[in-house]
Image 1 (cartoon, rainbow, N blue to C red):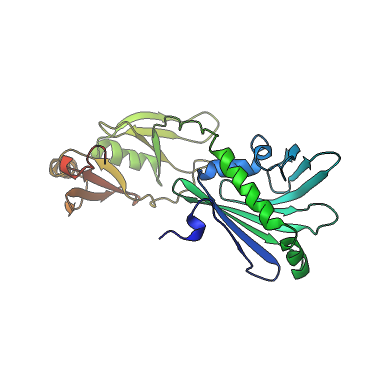
Image 2: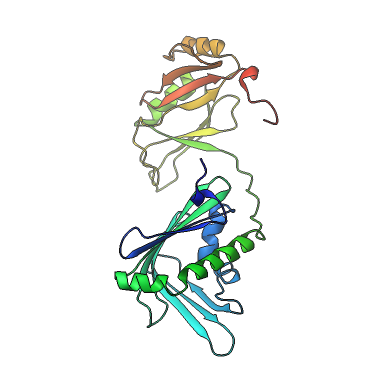
Length: 299
């Protein structure tokens, strides 16, 4: 069900406590772009410009915990507004927490920005925490709501003109498989399953062993590893890797004949599975998906 907060163009203001203001607005743009519009100098001045006739002349952002930001907005004549603060947390593209100050006449606030993906739109939730109820109430009387509404409207206009680069071509090449004994695992995957051994090398001075294998007919390979830096999945915890076959009954019989302990054929609504495990307990599934079970073209 669509709620008010889900609809682009609608801003809601709530007072969850005596010191907080929570603002929500959904923007018709992907989350990664909306996050960048709030955190990158090439985007921010294009929509966060202040009142009509103003512009952001300075936009300095050091986007990291402990990093600072400083925005200088200028209007006609000598009018100037400086917004500054320090980032406390940064988790792209989900969340930004920072302090914020509008100058000596206003108290410092703690702002938490959360970006929630909702299909092709993004909900922006801003929680502003003031040091006191009096400071919070003064902000509400200052034209804050009207200013934020104008900013959101400007943001929505701006994102419509920003084109994201197309997603790059990506080929799944390698799936790491944690094992306790590489030689024992090789005997299983090569001798019993019939995987092709592509590489088995030990780079000098590293203590590492790079062992890559490819299932017959597959474009994706696996990497058997033990104690490899950067890969810390516990041995035997990999689950449900799928090996697609054209005839699951023949494939099952072939594996049985080669000495692999496999389960029976499970029919899950016209898609067939056979389960088995390697010597370390990593689990695999043979899968047969008949043509009739595939999603029709164009659906």
